[in-house]
Image (cartoon, rainbow, N blue to C red; front, side, top):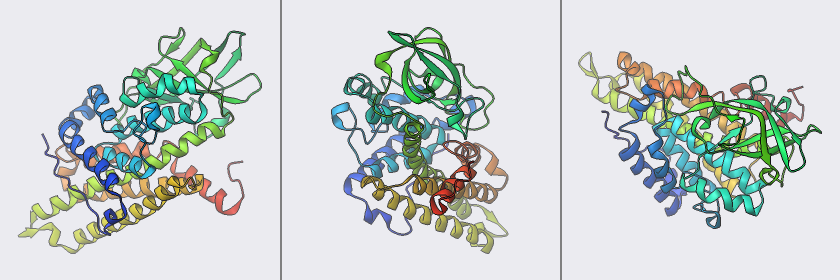
Length: 392
């Protein structure tokens, strides 16, 4: 069993810009992860299943809806605290952070922002503790980067809605208690519906054969004439902008989370380089290895500065979709490159589960694709700076 020796890396003294509450939130999450998750994460990854016994603990450290107000059962933290939590979770494993991101930004966020008071009081307190686990249904088999082309639909049947269609690549779906599902009404307008497990015709097949995010459960959502109560329609926002608003929140969390994965790979590479003796001295003494390490911490530091500023903008409700896309794209790209360099520094040992590198590498191949692909985020920035839409 690998001992988690991580203590953090802060080359530009970024902690000086954090509040005491920020550091307490981060350090508490780190201590819990070291005790409860790090000792079992490699085994969970190999088995290909999410360790569900961790769910109450995630609730206790505030990882479910960190920014949800206390009146709805949330911790009422700011956006930087949310980011720091995501960074600590993904420093351990992207699948762990994915579970929390989905619960927070893709389930709790739309209920909080787009739901009514009855929906908020019914679902948010139980989601905050982990008593309920949720998932988010947007991506379809034929509609990923173009969610507006979705075919999942619902019809008004008087006292209920009748929902039909399918979603795929859905984190948490195999064991979720509720799903926030995006579907078109008879006029073609996109709305959010809260679908509960146990509704007749609603099934959640598990996705098998993943080589990435193996410690996170992924599946489908299938709706075969599902009767959804009218009270389960999210009333306060419709149109494609509604789910995209959720994705902005999730992408923001990913921007922080990816830094965590990069930090873990850098930390492992730095330790290994000081311990591994070749040609009579530690490989840390060779120029090429120092070049790799120096470039790693430089890129991590740049990402930390970019993301902290984004967090400040989020706190002021000034962060734009374009700015969030830039951070998500930059930071995940940075992390996956650092993982690859760190793997090389570990030599053959880098492919074993004695070190976390290969697991991070495989996880990040999903992170660079979901919540908007690497190329799509480039086009979002392009649209933002030119005013020209390259999607059509």
